[in-house]
Structures are given as C-alpha cells and as structure tokens.
Image 1 (cartoon, rainbow, N blue to C red):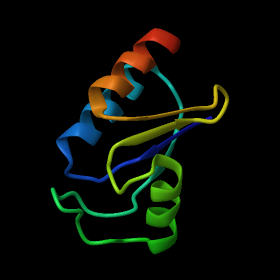
Image 2: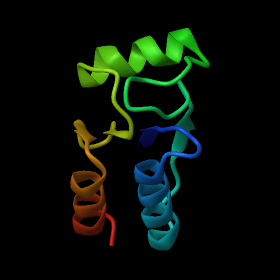
Image 3: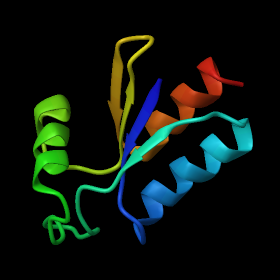
Image 4: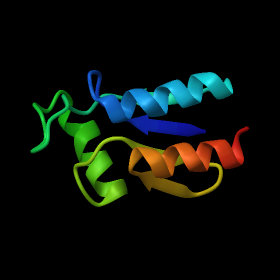
Length: 87
C-alpha cells in the first residue's frame, strides 16, 4: 500500500499526486498540515506526528510504500521511485 503525506496547495505534493494518477496507482492520502516553508497550520496533530515519526521531520510530501518497506521524501525522489517501481 502506498501512503502519501501531503498538503493541498503544495506544488511538490501536486507533482507526486499527478504522477500517481498518471501511473494509475491507488494510494491513501494524509493531510497533516497546510503547506508552508516553516510548516503550515497543523490540521491533524496525530497524522502530523505520525509523519514526523516515520520520516524524521515535518516535511511534505512523504511517501510510504508499506509493501516494499520504503519511505521517501523530496518530490523528485518520490517520482523517480514511482516511475521505476510502478510503471
């Protein structure tokens, strides 16, 4: 299963969502906070804390591939990974 921690209005999150859609991949989306360079307003404290626990920092987007045991941040890294493993 793929889980994407992201924020609506974040251009990097949008790039990852577009790639997932183009590849026809199903995923679960989490919206822990609003976008912002210093971390936007937290929308869901539990989800935001889970993202930090998994990724080590409060940074979006964050992709978790539970089937492969992979966790990736940085939109370019995520997109490369998706195109390699899900194309």
